[in-house]
Amino acid sequence: MWIDTVFFYFFALLTLTGAVLTVTRRNAVHSAISLIVSLIGVAGLFLLQQAQFLFAVQIVLYVGGIMVLFLFVIMLVNLDEASRIHQFNKQWVLALACVAAVSGELLFFIHKGASAFRLATPGAPAAGGLGNTERIADSLFSEYLLPFELASVLLLAAVIGSVIMAKKRV
Amino acid sequence: MHPITTVHYLVLSAALLAIGTIGVLTRRNIVIILMSIELILNAVNINLVAFSRHFESVTGQVFAIFVITVAVAEAAVGLGILIALFRNKETLQADEIELLKW
Image (cartoon, rainbow over all chains, first blue to last red):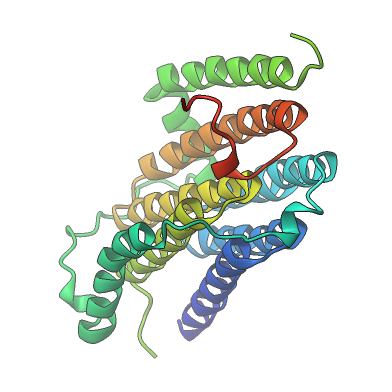
């Protein structure tokens, strides 16, 4: 069981370090590389929680798809002079206020430990020998069929919208 | 060593959400603001998957798939807008784009 603990802290460190570097780096390409590290950490956390299908989706879609898109855009728009000017705006008070609440929760957790949070009782393991992907497919194509179809409409709108936005002349 | 519980995942996702919020609120570069939004959506996904494991129900993972779909659509449209913006204004600083102010 201790190997789970070790892997959790490893992936958590990967995720948080990547996130902090993403937000603080001056060069946008460095930010994108740090974001890849962070997303791979999140994928590892999915695998630790027996969500194998989401692990594959995370790697293929985020690390393979969205990050290539980001890097292409960074190369397309010239960010050289943008990396030389001041990087942060003056909203740090607002940011501090937003983060203080979450930091309070974090300190409470470190002080009291996990048993201080009363979550609902865990569910029983699902019956039957179905794997993770089969169970997701069962749920997606029976209970959540309408949202699934609506998601395809959303993707169609996004494709058309981004092509029209990036066209030379509308 | 303590065993890893659901609460560990929730606290991790809260920390990731806080980092993403700081990025959205304080950075001036629009590309990095979009990346911070991706961080926030990933924090949501960690939360959903943690509760999916907690209740042994697959619904959380299905909703995580929908969140990923919306994130992909948002990134595509956002980066398209960003290219159009750069073509017209020659800048990517969020506080220099004030076309709607008067």
